Image 1 (cartoon, rainbow, N blue to C red):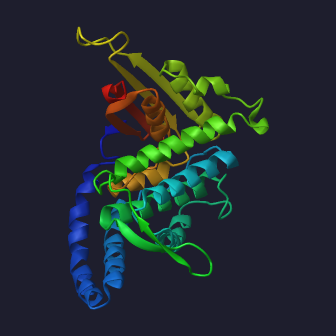
Image 2: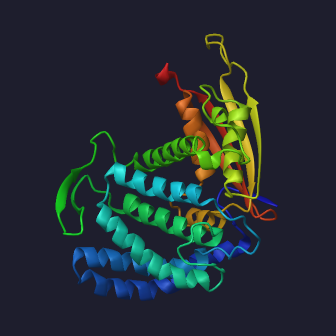
Image 3: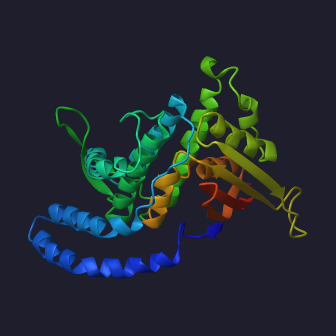
Amino acid sequence: MMQEGICFLTPASYLVRDKARSSSRCARLSLRLASALGSDDAELARRRLQDAVLDGVLRPPPVRQFRAPLDLAFAVLLARSTYNAMDELDFMPTDRFQREFFLLRADEYEKYIKHTRVARQGDLTDPAYFDFISYAAFRTVSQEMFGRPQKVFEEQFDAQGSKRLVLRDPNISDASLPSRFRQLVGDKVLLGVREQMQLPQFEGTQGPSPSALNSSSPSADLVGGILQTMKSKGFALVIDSEVSIGKVETAGSRNGPASMSVAWELAAPATLWGEAYLRRRRALVNDFDAMMIEAMFRQCGWRLAEGSYQNTRVAAGWKRAQRFVRDESKT
């Protein structure tokens, strides 16, 4: 059964409001105490109280089905791309991100492993652990980006406690941070995959050739190459894709298609639980497959016009669709 928009919406979801209201009285009482603390402590207390209220009704069920182990180099690439994109945007100190990331992991991990078998903590090839750690990173980024993004701040940059002043690019507004973050992550992952495909350890592995990922124009082969690479690295068990080319819509359009549509489906992806939880929390989502395809089209001179997703409960995965149009500003 397909469900569109906010994933896993059922009639029982209407209980969210009632449960949240019943917990809000205790939360308001605790917030009065938090307000008496310093501003930073009060803000942290407020967030944790909100999380406590929402956790029971938003947390998705554990993933039960088999998921393929991730290629270690690819898993590291996804994790590093997330961190480096956050760092480049300069909206929060890196030492603050590391602290908040650590605290969130500490708060969430015990609850997570109560229902999900993790072979070994810290093993990024284990899809259950990678699912958790990627969720925690995106949620930490979301909390700061949607909460109180900074434009000027000091950050600690070495073990001796040395600090430096950081100024965000004035052309990057608070409102543009989410889209810029997605673009950076997608660009970094796509670049990393292209570089990895050139390395000796990737020769002879199943997947597309390096040339299949370096075309100057989007095509079904190029989209299929990206998705096949993700499958071969263990990101999902099955990835099926379909690409359709739209007709030229106006007489003044230049030669070539005016739009291209892409649809694909993933079964048992490595980020299944985390993406569902992030969507429920209205946070940035770790749909690395979508970000890679967007990056490929963007680098070929196309921009995303619209996108959608559906949660496939039976297949325990995602079905996505995107439509791209030529970016005339690049011509």
